[in-house]
Image (cartoon, rainbow, N blue to C red; front, side, top):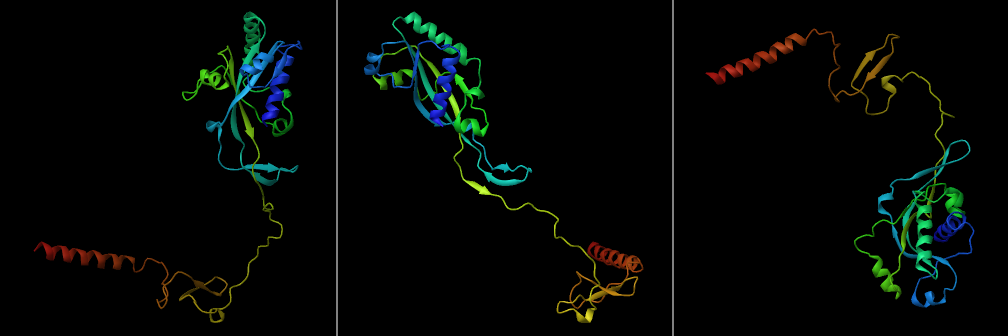
Length: 254
Protein backbone atom coordinates (compact mmCIF):
# COMPACT_ATOMS: atom_id res chain seq x y z
CA UNK A 1 0.00 0.00 0.00
CA UNK A 2 2.89 2.41 0.69
CA UNK A 3 4.30 2.09 -2.80
CA UNK A 4 0.82 2.74 -4.23
CA UNK A 5 0.64 6.02 -2.31
CA UNK A 6 4.10 6.91 -3.69
CA UNK A 7 2.90 6.33 -7.23
CA UNK A 8 -0.29 8.32 -6.68
CA UNK A 9 1.65 11.32 -5.34
CA UNK A 10 4.18 11.17 -8.17
CA UNK A 11 1.40 11.05 -10.77
CA UNK A 12 -0.46 13.93 -9.08
CA UNK A 13 2.61 16.18 -8.94
CA UNK A 14 3.70 15.48 -12.49
CA UNK A 15 0.22 16.09 -13.89
CA UNK A 16 -0.67 19.32 -12.06
CA UNK A 17 1.95 21.49 -10.33
CA UNK A 18 4.93 20.33 -12.41
CA UNK A 19 2.88 20.11 -15.64
CA UNK A 20 5.20 17.60 -17.23
CA UNK A 21 8.30 19.74 -16.66
CA UNK A 22 11.80 18.35 -16.41
CA UNK A 23 11.65 18.08 -12.62
CA UNK A 24 12.42 14.77 -10.94
CA UNK A 25 10.22 13.35 -8.17
CA UNK A 26 12.18 11.11 -5.81
CA UNK A 27 11.71 9.50 -2.40
CA UNK A 28 15.29 9.37 -1.14
CA UNK A 29 16.40 10.45 2.31
CA UNK A 30 17.65 14.07 1.92
CA UNK A 31 20.95 13.49 3.64
CA UNK A 32 24.05 15.64 3.16
CA UNK A 33 25.61 13.07 0.85
CA UNK A 34 22.45 12.81 -1.26
CA UNK A 35 22.14 16.59 -1.55
CA UNK A 36 25.67 16.72 -2.94
CA UNK A 37 24.62 14.52 -5.86
CA UNK A 38 21.60 16.58 -6.91
CA UNK A 39 22.37 18.38 -10.18
CA UNK A 40 18.84 18.98 -11.56
CA UNK A 41 15.59 20.47 -10.22
CA UNK A 42 14.12 17.84 -7.89
CA UNK A 43 11.12 17.38 -5.63
CA UNK A 44 11.87 15.05 -2.73
CA UNK A 45 9.11 13.23 -0.83
CA UNK A 46 10.84 11.57 2.09
CA UNK A 47 8.69 9.14 4.10
CA UNK A 48 9.97 9.71 7.63
CA UNK A 49 7.18 8.37 9.87
CA UNK A 50 4.51 5.63 9.85
CA UNK A 51 1.95 5.24 12.64
CA UNK A 52 -1.69 4.16 13.01
CA UNK A 53 -4.44 6.76 12.80
CA UNK A 54 -6.31 5.81 15.97
CA UNK A 55 -9.22 8.24 15.37
CA UNK A 56 -10.21 6.27 12.26
CA UNK A 57 -10.18 2.81 13.80
CA UNK A 58 -13.53 0.99 13.58
CA UNK A 59 -14.97 -1.99 15.43
CA UNK A 60 -17.14 -4.86 14.28
CA UNK A 61 -17.20 -6.58 10.88
CA UNK A 62 -18.01 -5.47 7.34
CA UNK A 63 -20.29 -7.58 5.14
CA UNK A 64 -19.36 -8.74 1.65
CA UNK A 65 -22.24 -9.31 -0.78
CA UNK A 66 -22.64 -11.28 -3.99
CA UNK A 67 -24.58 -10.30 -7.12
CA UNK A 68 -27.91 -11.14 -5.46
CA UNK A 69 -27.17 -8.97 -2.43
CA UNK A 70 -26.63 -11.96 -0.11
CA UNK A 71 -23.94 -11.80 2.57
CA UNK A 72 -21.24 -14.31 1.64
CA UNK A 73 -18.42 -13.27 3.99
CA UNK A 74 -17.44 -10.84 6.71
CA UNK A 75 -14.13 -9.15 7.36
CA UNK A 76 -12.65 -6.64 9.73
CA UNK A 77 -12.82 -2.97 8.71
CA UNK A 78 -9.60 -1.45 7.31
CA UNK A 79 -7.15 0.13 9.70
CA UNK A 80 -5.69 3.46 8.64
CA UNK A 81 -2.02 4.36 8.94
CA UNK A 82 -0.58 7.84 8.68
CA UNK A 83 2.28 8.15 6.22
CA UNK A 84 4.21 11.36 6.93
CA UNK A 85 6.18 12.80 4.01
CA UNK A 86 8.74 15.60 4.23
CA UNK A 87 8.45 17.48 0.91
CA UNK A 88 11.40 19.60 -0.17
CA UNK A 89 12.40 21.33 -3.40
CA UNK A 90 15.98 21.29 -4.67
CA UNK A 91 17.20 23.81 -7.25
CA UNK A 92 20.18 26.12 -7.64
CA UNK A 93 18.34 29.22 -6.43
CA UNK A 94 16.27 29.55 -3.22
CA UNK A 95 13.69 31.64 -5.08
CA UNK A 96 13.03 28.76 -7.48
CA UNK A 97 12.67 26.37 -4.56
CA UNK A 98 10.11 28.66 -2.90
CA UNK A 99 8.17 28.99 -6.16
CA UNK A 100 8.15 25.21 -6.55
CA UNK A 101 6.97 24.68 -2.96
CA UNK A 102 4.21 27.22 -3.52
CA UNK A 103 2.96 25.29 -6.55
CA UNK A 104 2.98 22.03 -4.61
CA UNK A 105 1.12 23.58 -1.69
CA UNK A 106 -1.53 25.10 -3.97
CA UNK A 107 -2.10 21.71 -5.59
CA UNK A 108 -2.42 19.80 -2.32
CA UNK A 109 -4.79 22.35 -0.78
CA UNK A 110 -7.36 21.51 -3.47
CA UNK A 111 -7.82 17.96 -2.18
CA UNK A 112 -8.86 16.46 1.14
CA UNK A 113 -8.01 12.98 -0.16
CA UNK A 114 -5.91 11.52 -2.93
CA UNK A 115 -7.82 11.84 -6.23
CA UNK A 116 -9.53 8.58 -7.08
CA UNK A 117 -8.22 8.67 -10.65
CA UNK A 118 -4.64 8.60 -9.32
CA UNK A 119 -5.14 5.47 -7.21
CA UNK A 120 -3.89 2.13 -8.47
CA UNK A 121 -3.72 -1.46 -7.29
CA UNK A 122 -5.31 -2.29 -3.94
CA UNK A 123 -6.23 1.32 -3.17
CA UNK A 124 -8.28 1.50 -6.36
CA UNK A 125 -9.98 -1.85 -5.73
CA UNK A 126 -11.26 -1.25 -2.20
CA UNK A 127 -12.97 1.98 -3.28
CA UNK A 128 -12.47 3.98 -0.06
CA UNK A 129 -11.13 7.51 0.35
CA UNK A 130 -7.48 8.07 1.22
CA UNK A 131 -7.49 11.26 3.34
CA UNK A 132 -4.50 13.57 3.48
CA UNK A 133 -3.52 16.77 5.27
CA UNK A 134 -0.85 19.30 4.42
CA UNK A 135 1.27 21.65 6.54
CA UNK A 136 -0.39 20.94 9.89
CA UNK A 137 1.57 21.60 13.11
CA UNK A 138 3.68 18.58 14.07
CA UNK A 139 2.70 16.52 17.14
CA UNK A 140 4.22 17.46 20.46
CA UNK A 141 6.53 14.44 20.46
CA UNK A 142 8.16 15.28 17.13
CA UNK A 143 9.64 18.35 15.44
CA UNK A 144 11.02 18.85 11.96
CA UNK A 145 14.32 20.06 13.37
CA UNK A 146 14.77 16.61 14.92
CA UNK A 147 14.15 15.00 11.54
CA UNK A 148 16.80 17.13 9.88
CA UNK A 149 19.22 16.43 12.73
CA UNK A 150 18.68 12.68 12.32
CA UNK A 151 19.33 13.01 8.58
CA UNK A 152 22.56 14.92 9.21
CA UNK A 153 21.58 17.72 6.85
CA UNK A 154 20.89 21.41 7.11
CA UNK A 155 17.43 22.73 7.96
CA UNK A 156 15.49 23.50 4.76
CA UNK A 157 12.00 24.85 3.95
CA UNK A 158 9.63 21.92 3.67
CA UNK A 159 5.99 20.82 3.59
CA UNK A 160 4.65 18.12 5.89
CA UNK A 161 2.19 15.86 4.06
CA UNK A 162 0.28 13.17 6.01
CA UNK A 163 -1.63 10.54 4.02
CA UNK A 164 -3.99 8.20 5.93
CA UNK A 165 -3.87 4.99 3.94
CA UNK A 166 -6.16 2.00 4.68
CA UNK A 167 -4.63 -1.42 5.28
CA UNK A 168 -7.08 -4.12 4.18
CA UNK A 169 -5.00 -7.21 5.01
CA UNK A 170 -7.33 -8.90 7.51
CA UNK A 171 -8.94 -12.35 7.95
CA UNK A 172 -12.10 -13.15 5.97
CA UNK A 173 -14.84 -15.10 7.74
CA UNK A 174 -17.23 -17.01 5.43
CA UNK A 175 -20.90 -16.44 6.20
CA UNK A 176 -23.40 -19.25 6.65
CA UNK A 177 -26.24 -19.87 4.18
CA UNK A 178 -29.10 -17.38 4.30
CA UNK A 179 -32.14 -18.24 6.38
CA UNK A 180 -35.23 -19.02 4.29
CA UNK A 181 -38.68 -20.58 4.71
CA UNK A 182 -37.92 -23.37 2.26
CA UNK A 183 -38.71 -26.74 3.87
CA UNK A 184 -40.55 -25.19 6.82
CA UNK A 185 -43.85 -26.97 7.55
CA UNK A 186 -46.56 -25.95 9.99
CA UNK A 187 -49.55 -28.01 11.04
CA UNK A 188 -52.03 -28.81 13.81
CA UNK A 189 -52.65 -32.14 15.49
CA UNK A 190 -54.76 -33.45 18.34
CA UNK A 191 -53.02 -33.95 21.65
CA UNK A 192 -52.98 -37.58 22.84
CA UNK A 193 -55.31 -38.53 25.70
CA UNK A 194 -53.90 -37.90 29.20
CA UNK A 195 -53.46 -41.58 29.95
CA UNK A 196 -51.14 -41.98 26.92
CA UNK A 197 -48.74 -39.15 27.84
CA UNK A 198 -45.48 -40.36 29.41
CA UNK A 199 -44.39 -38.93 32.82
CA UNK A 200 -44.67 -35.35 34.05
CA UNK A 201 -48.34 -35.27 33.21
CA UNK A 202 -50.18 -32.11 34.11
CA UNK A 203 -52.44 -32.27 37.15
CA UNK A 204 -55.35 -30.35 35.69
CA UNK A 205 -57.33 -30.57 32.48
CA UNK A 206 -60.04 -28.69 30.73
CA UNK A 207 -62.62 -29.83 28.22
CA UNK A 208 -62.44 -28.22 24.81
CA UNK A 209 -65.62 -27.34 22.86
CA UNK A 210 -65.12 -30.49 20.78
CA UNK A 211 -65.22 -32.62 23.95
CA UNK A 212 -61.49 -33.43 24.03
CA UNK A 213 -59.74 -33.03 27.38
CA UNK A 214 -56.72 -30.75 27.07
CA UNK A 215 -54.00 -30.44 29.72
CA UNK A 216 -53.46 -27.22 31.66
CA UNK A 217 -49.72 -26.78 32.25
CA UNK A 218 -48.15 -24.73 35.03
CA UNK A 219 -50.05 -26.32 37.97
CA UNK A 220 -48.24 -27.75 40.93
CA UNK A 221 -47.92 -31.57 41.08
CA UNK A 222 -50.61 -33.01 43.31
CA UNK A 223 -52.63 -29.79 43.36
CA UNK A 224 -56.36 -30.14 42.70
CA UNK A 225 -57.70 -28.90 39.40
CA UNK A 226 -58.48 -25.23 39.26
CA UNK A 227 -62.08 -24.17 39.26
CA UNK A 228 -63.38 -21.96 36.52
CA UNK A 229 -62.68 -18.30 37.01
CA UNK A 230 -66.31 -17.35 37.45
CA UNK A 231 -65.62 -15.03 40.38
CA UNK A 232 -67.78 -17.13 42.73
CA UNK A 233 -65.16 -17.47 45.45
CA UNK A 234 -63.27 -14.27 44.88
CA UNK A 235 -65.29 -12.12 47.24
CA UNK A 236 -65.39 -14.60 50.18
CA UNK A 237 -61.61 -15.04 50.01
CA UNK A 238 -61.09 -11.31 49.94
CA UNK A 239 -63.39 -10.87 52.94
CA UNK A 240 -61.56 -13.58 54.86
CA UNK A 241 -58.18 -11.99 54.25
CA UNK A 242 -59.42 -8.55 55.17
CA UNK A 243 -61.09 -9.92 58.31
CA UNK A 244 -57.95 -11.68 59.45
CA UNK A 245 -55.80 -8.61 58.94
CA UNK A 246 -58.29 -6.38 60.75
CA UNK A 247 -58.49 -8.71 63.76
CA UNK A 248 -54.73 -8.79 64.12
CA UNK A 249 -54.48 -5.04 63.91
CA UNK A 250 -57.19 -4.62 66.57
CA UNK A 251 -55.55 -7.11 68.89
CA UNK A 252 -52.21 -5.37 68.55
CA UNK A 253 -53.81 -1.99 69.22
CA UNK A 254 -55.37 -3.21 72.47
